[in-house]
Amino acid sequence: MRICVLPGDGIGPEVCREAVKVLKKTEPCIELIYGDIGYEYYTKSGNNLPEETLRKVSSCDATLFGAVTTPPNIENYSSAILKLRRHFNLYANIRPIKSIPHQISRPGINMVIVRENTEDLYSGIERVEDNGDRAINEMVITRKASERIIRYAFSLARSQGYKKVTCVHKANVVRAACGLFRKIAFEIADENKDIPLDEMIVDACAMQLIRSPESFDVLVTTNMFGDILSDEACMLVGGLGLAYSGNIGKKISVFEPVHGSAPKHAGKNSANPLATILAAKMMLEHLGKHESAKKIEDAVIECIRKNKVTADLGGSLTCEQAGDAVLEEMR
Ligand code: IPM
Ligand code: MN
Image (cartoon, rainbow, N blue to C red; front, side):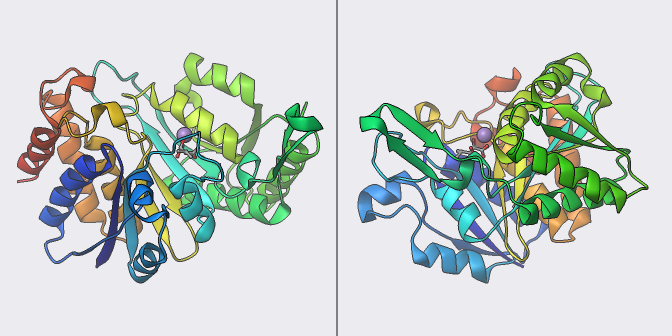
């Protein structure tokens, strides 16, 4: 098994180091290929996603990504993770939200947010008019991308035993773009009669996520709504220090923590590595290594149960110690 590791900026290298330790423990024969990505590499080379890295990602079975910094004030600079998603057409962004045995998590929650990952307001089609006083970003929704993400949501629901799929949109206002997404969701539902589809307007969904998060199974939504709802939802079950995700394409897949590079915390050995460790677990599941994945997940849950965690979860361990604690629980 060949895994590409892209640590990136800020706390990315620290959290990836711990995840790699854990991966090596369950899969000793794993081959690791490291690649450059992100803002720090850009300051040295003028490029935040070199060709060489793209080749490495292509040559591996899957990729583990840490985090990158994206300064908002450099003209024509585009986030390296967005470029990576776009380049490899990683169309599905999968974000599991599950309760953990810890007082900061609410109980009884088990949902997956299936976020479309290639279009919507992320399509990059924008212009500024009227001497800078009018700015337009296009929300692009296509039948092709909508069909494939909605199909993905139904098959994920079926294979993982979820009872329903909820399509989240704003078709009452954004009539053309969200209207198309909604219409296609009901078309695809007709091909998947074993799993019921319901729908929710995005603002109501944001409210229901707080009011009754136990009632959700699989949510499928457009890119920006998925971005926002997944940050909201992860706060119900332990926060960004535990939230992980997979960017899935036809052949290539990239797994990452949902948190960013947190420059303020970088190099302090204080970041929580569990989100990246869980991203590695998700990667192993994707590669069919279910036993190893289960071992990692069980060990992480044991660490949480025993409060062998970093400060964000109320513990007192460093990033490195939190990684070691997971290794210890895997014995
Ligand atoms: C995420 C992040 C990214 C996104 C940023 C860093 C470009 O917030 O993965 O959710 O908006 O998709
Ligand atoms: Mn986000």
